[in-house]
Length: 133
Image 1 (cartoon, rainbow, N blue to C red):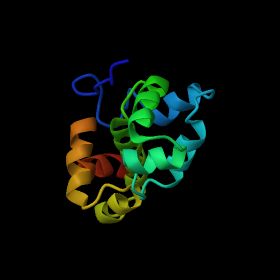
Image 2 (cartoon, one colour; image 1 turned 180 degrees about the vertical axis):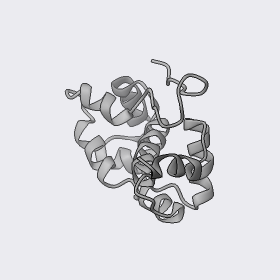
Image 3 (cartoon, helix red, strand yellow; image 1 turned 120 degrees about the vertical axis):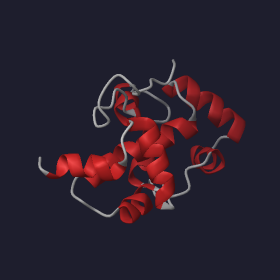
């Protein structure tokens, strides 16, 4: 499965892909519990060695099985989950630094770069667009 791009097809706030929702649809995934833990711990180190250890697998085996189960690499999954969470946190008007820390995309310049790449809009602009809603 190819990781869908949202560039040029929808506005920045209209995601076509949510790794969490996709994983929940695949509820029989061997990584369902791990994905739930990841969602609750986005500010933790979520690299392959850490996730593999948590899953009781070697890094290489974890990576292969995770891609098979979810259709995306662990790194892409984690970034997408963090960005989806950041998008939700931006709406209430939290500072970019606080949002970046809460979702594990710090320093906040990393959040800005990843957010713009995924949604095609800067996080500040996204927040401003939703301030009136």
